[in-house]
Image 1 (cartoon, rainbow, N blue to C red):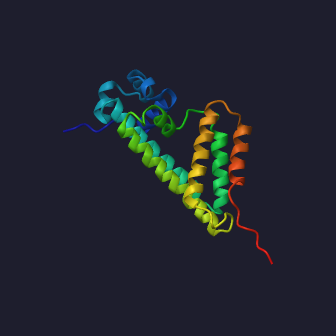
Image 2 (cartoon, rainbow, N blue to C red):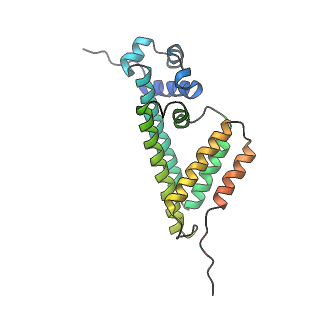
Image 3 (tube, one colour):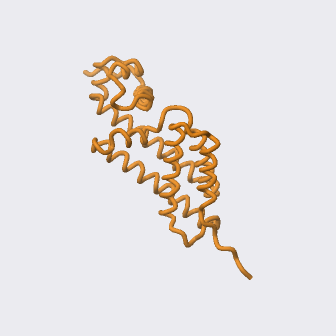
Length: 196
């Protein structure tokens, strides 16, 4: 009879996530994972498989939670305000802490590891849909030109959000990132003025 696990699986995934976000996949050694999680090699491998399998579990967990968090933020109304608040939050949160695991996975592994590439592509496709739906709601609410393409504008705002994060981690100031976020929202096409 197998012994029950004597650790909190989510806590282990969270600790491993922090290690991978801080050091990257290649830069995170087994010893660092053991130190971060408090588990020995045997327990880690028995529970999660090898380092690659653990990374995929961590990436799945991170993507699921991150996509859900962004989706919830962009569901708020009015939609234009939700988009504005989200971009400002990204701008202000990008100058501290480790980088987004989706971003680092894309840069480090997506084009050489098909398992990672599929997961990252799916996460970004879902995020793209979240932005597009928020733009469509902003159109329905009368804040964005109804003739504009919501998918194109959603993709643009997702690209801005990812760019803000990359620039923040590269050393851009909060003020410059906030200016960019404000400019992105300000550049969205507004409904044509009514005449007569």
